[in-house]
Image (cartoon, rainbow, N blue to C red; front, side):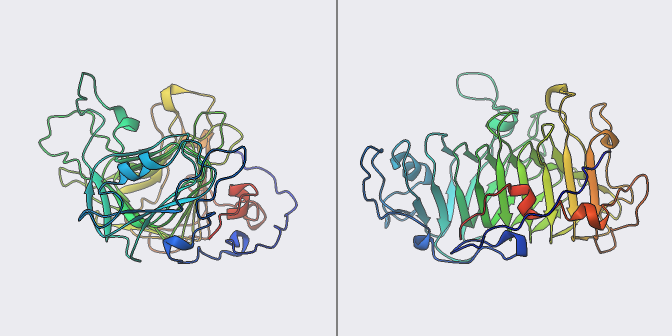
Length: 366
């Protein structure tokens, strides 16, 4: 593994009403209606803006009873922020935010992650109406293909039951993102295999994702994809397989060469599994693409005894040692000293592996 040399640190410009990423300050917990917007005013020579806030409620007390109906109501190429405010309840549906609907914010109306649940149970091998199967990316309960998307105060769940399903391809995604400048604040992502797919629109595209104060649960490759993603101040929880066995992998990055992969920072990784049974990650060369350069960095994070003493492993014939995997100043029973099987960043290297480096000049607004 070759780590990039240290470059001079850059000092970000002061922020007004924004998240000071370089100092580690989290997103402010503001009511959904306080997200930036223009009150629905139209702009000359631009597409008409939607109302600043749309309300979803199962009991009919809002504008819509399903989340997808609210997304559908946002005009294509909407130029300003639209908050879809969701009242407490369980919404059993699939939701797609297409690429031509940027600036959408999904927001639960309470501060709890569990009060609003968007859930469905498609798996990769689930038959589609009209023939074929969904495939891994198509199994997502919520799929976000647009840029500048935000979600807060709700959870995304895929409750596909692997046991006795008769389905061979059991990957089941709760949330898939494929846009740039994505913020996931105080959310849950719950599933088993392939829970959270953090992707980009293409191998040559940037897909930056900032995740703050999240609960992410699964067992096999349950945080995966080619996005440049920061997982900050979050709880990452390993669970047993459907057959009751322990063993799994937290991350499976498929990073393109020259781009950032996954940065876990200021978080904790734990779970209801046997001691020393799970890996931190492995390199996913999607489609056997040898040009990819998967990256995962885990730093300043508490690791439970669930993590193996050799925390990285190979995948599909590709060695993790040929890609970019390292730790820095982790704590807990699952942490360990530097070795050939456990690369650690130096202090000088770690200075270039911070949140601001990952997000490349983008500073998510609160």
